[in-house]
Every structure is written in structure tokens, then in C-alpha cells.
Image 1: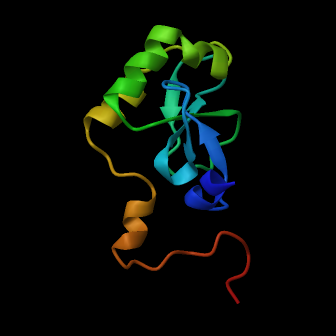
Image 2 (image 1 turned 45 degrees about the vertical axis):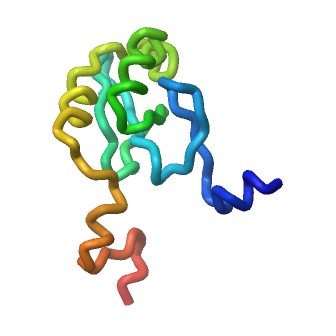
Length: 113
């Protein structure tokens, strides 16, 4: 129970590399490109259609996921991880970083009124 309170009440996901759990804000969402392609894409906004897999944004977890062949199992045969590797090597910030800059965010639904 203490661990639940420590992490908060948000959704918990499991990293496909290290197999440790973390909140959505700690992990990067990955999806298969679709249309029979084997390419894995980084879903920066966490809105892309399809089944998603989650990975800590670290080279260690990426290497573990590749070694374990976790991408192919989690994303139905998707194994081309060059987009994920370039994203992690570029040091791209997680999704929450733009919100910290003070920019107003748009509503997600039709509640603009």
C-alpha cells in the first residue's frame, strides 16, 4: 500500500526492457508503424492508434529490450528500432517538458467554449 501512495494514483506501466514498473510520465510509449511494416515509432504525444509498449528513456533499457527481443513480442513482429534509438540518443525530453515552459495547452476535446 505504501508503494501505491508513493507513486501516486496515476496509471502504472511496465518497461519492456528492464520489466520494472513506472508511471506513464517516466516511460516513453512506442507503437508499430502499421500497414505490415516492422518499424517501431516513438509516440511522443501518446495518442497514436494501436497497441503500445512502454520503455524507460535510457540506453540500458533499450539494449535490454533488443537483447530480449521484446519489441517483436510486444508490438506484433515490429523489430526495426532505429527511430527509437535515434530518439533516445538525441536526448529528446519527455512529453511533460513542454508543459513546464509555461505554454498554454489546447483542450483535447471539443470543450473550447
